[in-house]
Length: 621
Ligand code: PLP
Image (tube, rainbow, N blue to C red):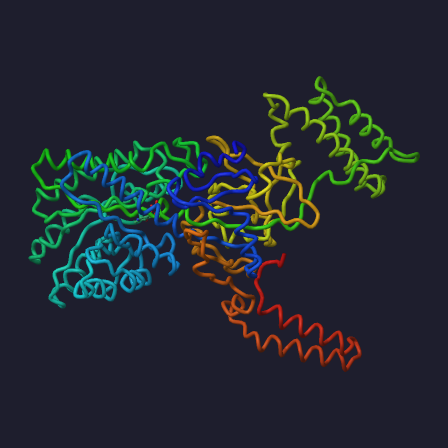
């Protein structure tokens, strides 16, 4: 367990059972659990192939419950007289089944949605049917966006238009006058509190979105002039996603509370404070301010927000706002697990070295002797000797004085030397600088049936760390150290950063493959942002996805969403598969005429081609 740190990041949903399989407990300690490996086997028997995304809707429900419970507890603790009305940022995961579940689970808490674009607004308007839930309208807006949002008020919805660009102010006032509707409007402030890490640029004076303090005062004046000041009701800020350190949150809420109070004193009709996203996920389980972790929990987060606002409003005799957070990552990450299989393994030293023979270059004997002599005392020196002999062997090969067989022997011996050195350094606490990379160089390459670009784009784009581990054989000691290489023909299509205690390690401990037996890995906590940002590099499409819900008798498969087939991805790039089949048919006819192919062969080719087009883009296992 310690190896993969599951007891840290997995809490309370993922653990390891006596069979050595990962167990999923969607309700934490309060409900049933299921064996993930057995679930994958059962899905395979239903013809749902890997790679496969499994969504646990009970986990989604649990996340919503937890967030609301934390705010409820904080509100009770500080005698806060306002309420919490969270919203889910649709951009975090727009999948219909997920948003439908989310709205349903959020109903008891009047949990709403946040839209960051016109298409997301369309989703939110169509799916959000919870009376009293908020619909926060963020992102760039044109007249159509603003009209739609305002008119939605007439359907009983509570859209709040958040001004993010100064150009939107005039537009909102004009549309309001034209439609004769008094909207609820807010502003997104550019806080001077700087976020941190990868998403730190979301705040500060040069942030992409938001209004500066002088601009906000200008908005107040314009709204007053237009007799709309009572529409100005909300202050929003967002200092970035995955805020690892609680002090950044404290600073931001302190600054925002001050702005909130001052806006009220300036005459705005302040009723809502929207603290944006940022509530982090502990991807490595270290509970630190490392970028893949966080040094606070959900309760600390809620407490700090509630307490700060309570104080700021009390000092100025203002009533406290309805609190809104736009937590995406913290709601959606845990509910999905990506399962993929290993296709094959490549080892640098897979072929054992041979004894030098008569006629072999002297270099081969030197390398052989070096390899025999390596020990605890001399390994550093002999490692350099071996490297030098290998370099020389390659130079001689290039000059034409070493045969290809001799070069092969030299390389095998060099890898054997490296392995011996590595075995020694692994037992030591201190590893000399020049040998630090040896582990990575000697790592096995496990080829995964997956596209990193499609299923974990943040691994490639921003070196995001996700917990990755086998979902079975966890009662066996892993005996391989590996990196993962995906199916794409792209050297960036790999994963070679893995979670470690408050750090990153370059290899993942895995088991050697067993003939005829599958080996499944799971990538966890990847339910936020990955699906929609994934791309079609090499035309690997969406993976299969299933929605699982626990029942008193076990579980039920609520939905199976089949992944893209080849003809579907080809349509994205404007191919007509009928036309492609016809082209191949005509080529076969021509080849038949020229007697280059037999009729049986041409039929087999055509049938395989046609059948393949309707199949999954990934390899069949
Ligand atoms: N709200 C806004 C305006 C955002 O830009 C984001 C994402 O960066 C979020 C909410 C969601 O943030 P998180 O996923 O960190 O909760």
